[in-house]
Length: 462
Image (cartoon, rainbow, N blue to C red; front, side, top):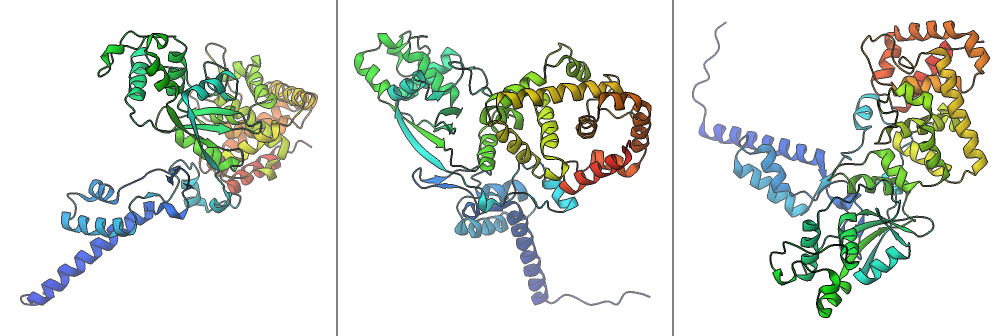
């Protein structure tokens, strides 16, 4: 049937249609923006003494800049400006709705929320502004109240000092010119000691210069001080440096461990980011943390990991695997919770209270479990998928399952059941449901429980 001819559209109809399209575009743009960004008043920590938000979730973001970047050239600039004005009138600065560092976000969308995550409202961040003149700062470093590398061995997660003397000189010049210096961040432990977690290069440069360890060079404005060590400066200039006030922000020991951990991540997200285990290495010091370092140096473990130099992974990924093993060993599968990094944090924190006897006992469990795993598998196949031909790294989920099992069985039983265990393992790897549990949503609580349930039922050695 031929289409009916509707005749020319009335001008008012055109106007209405255009307005409708414009409203739809505005609505769609606003919906997109609010799905990603929120008013920081919703949950971003605010430091009243410091006079502003602590942007641990990202930002601040300007609505106009965000909208321009996303929609310029796609819709009219007039429409972008209208929405930007509306949003800016509501809130001048925005932050992320979702945590961009949350590794469980995709899993939650696909598999549903996990019940164990600590609600944001319960995660308390307590910060304290801490103004120190340089002389007091140097004194507290010398007296071991404030710790930074390479003056001390901690915090061990810190990068080495990398500033050249030229960069350090420019920093000293900035102080003399009274250029505003961004705050440094310190973490307070339970003994009220302070670890520098952001600002190491600046603070150590000051320490070096005041202790006459280099000459300032390549100054662009105060050229008369080029090639001067600290003691060669006029006394007035020396006093100017020593009485200069640095703003420090202390994350106190009253802060909730999970939010404190998140702050560590974000303070390091703009440089070479520290991974979760490197941050734990700073926060949860003590015998248990030292034991993790000993565990990854166990010879048979290094053989399994096929380390070229027979050394543990420098980014502490091996240490995190050992920590995973102890978390399951100590608290069982039923003790697992998400986000996984917080579950591991809890394990590391609890370990700080273990005495030497308990530490040695756990180290023995680790080494014996590795030895028993090697009764079943050759080093190059241990904790790896046998259904994949190519050389592959250790599969964390298989590592969890195998180590959980062998730690509960005797070496003699494992030796007598070796072939049966291998056969059952191969059968599981040909089960599409089990393979899916090894590759998707691997940290999700429900799927983790399903993975262990299938494995334990299959490996019932009776």
